[in-house]
Image 1 (spheres, rainbow, N blue to C red):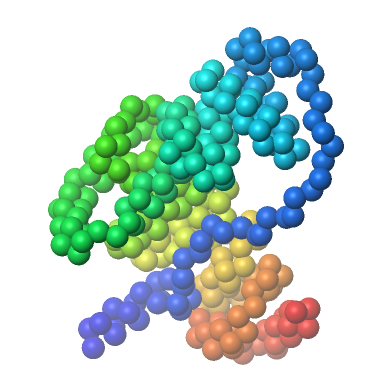
Image 2 (spheres, helix red, strand yellow; image 1 turned 180 degrees about the horizontal axis):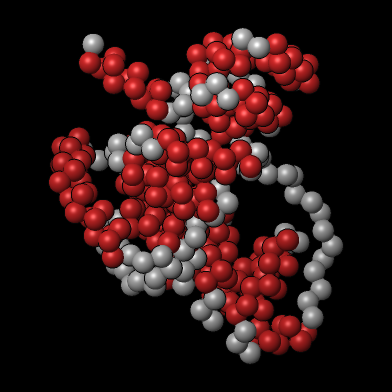
Length: 317
């Protein structure tokens, strides 16, 4: 009975029942477009060879856009040797795409040291993939126990000492995925911040999860805004949750708009409720069964405008 009561309180706090976190997966990549052969300005090439890493990066990008892989890698590698972080990252991506994980990791590590967040994220993924190699069951159990004992101290140390954007020397002989994820988020990788949010949500540490989802939101990751709202609702801080649902809804996140419609429906603020319900439908909300059964929408559902909006949306789909 107590468990049922606690579950009911949670569902009320989150605004709408069965709220699931959103991933950061975007639309599928468009098919490659053929482009003309690249002609590089000799003066630009001279600048690159004379030590301008940014120019090398731009030349490499031009070749990359033209799908001239060898030439693009050549200039990214030159840029990387000139300590240009983005050049190192792109060189690593090219090596990664050609199944050269060790070479790609060397480029990623150098890029990460120069504050390329996506490179730090790539290192964390490489380390994680290595950890998934099958090991004896006893070893896995010992690692889980060690992780459980050490995680809290490690989290506090990393979160307490790492300043956003700070350059830090690190040694990864232990293969610390969490460390590189924190660096990736510090260096403004939206995906890195999202992964940290999921990491702490799985540990039921909603406050920490909120911190990283919020950072993803402020880096223009729409799903981060929605998830930050969910975390604040879990913590019983509904007003702050609404703030992030509003940010998500303004970025055309249908679920965020829907949660706002639920909130205002429960508060019997009908005009606001319909405003956000209409936005949710316009932004692609299509869970027709949920619309007809969600108790949080009962106030709106009892009014003729609800049927009008839903039928209009269904006719478009």
